[in-house]
Image (cartoon, rainbow, N blue to C red; front, side, top):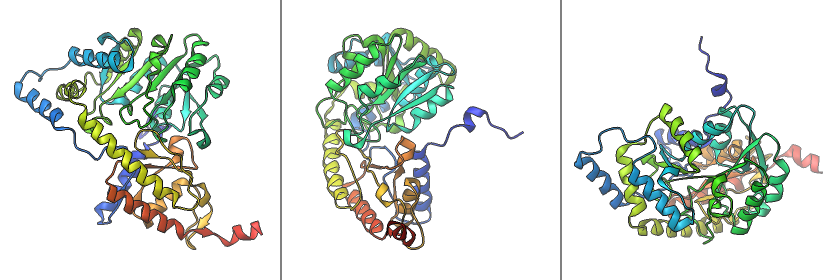
Length: 408
């Protein structure tokens, strides 16, 4: 009687949300937890965006259902942004506005993937890529980027896994969880591989495009031949500190946009009318608040990187975008404080939450069980205190007696 569908039973709860929930549980018990698990800006939504939403309410014109794909002027503004900033000739007909980038990805996957189709996922990856592919009854094919290559998958690696059932490739740049940014040359090489395979599509997640310290942000859809092969995913949550407004979108060839529009029409219909007015103000208004936030993230990156280097056994890359570090912590696996032995990154995150009162996310959820994700979307004081607690707590872990005997 109490039986859920196989598709729901086959997927896990979002690891980022699960760790955030555990942090809230500790806080409810009066414990001073520093939460570095959620990828959520700690800045307020810029004032001009909030004012636009208030005006939309007061105007009284935005009380009815919006068009499923979003208001025409917002779609035109998004298309104009891509024409001007990203050199991609999108039109309003190519844009579908959704309830966040996550729904945008789900719309695309359910519109394109049939049971048994394969989707190549560049790993480490954002936690929901894998789950969404499996919900469509497709098969995720993981390709792993190494920390030595800044966690980036190469075109040669991609070529090796493409088969007759491969339908799409998905990745993010800047990347969640690693902060890696693909260079123009790397994207050109990936595009060259894709163009050799008829009907193969790219799903390019650009949600962190504004938080890019490399100065080398490129939309793969702008490369020759890639407009018809690319679904660009983006949104307002990260660059404009609008996570709770829930506005994401795709920009894609019209036939794919039409499919996503049909899918969304049966599931949720349109995004909130007031959120769309806020989004319109964001994408057409002053970019200065976003640039200020990015500079703050840049400072925090330097702080966290310096503090991570002080922790023995932690190996970190130097991220070029987003607001995450994804350090390898596997040197602590098998170590013990005399009562508890760390088995893996899941165990280490729970240990740090319990002992250091710092909430991180295990790397296995992102495709690399040797790592943990640290969000630096937090105040400088919290970041310094959190890294201090982590360093002190990890210093109490030693190789246990049984391991020393084996080594000897």
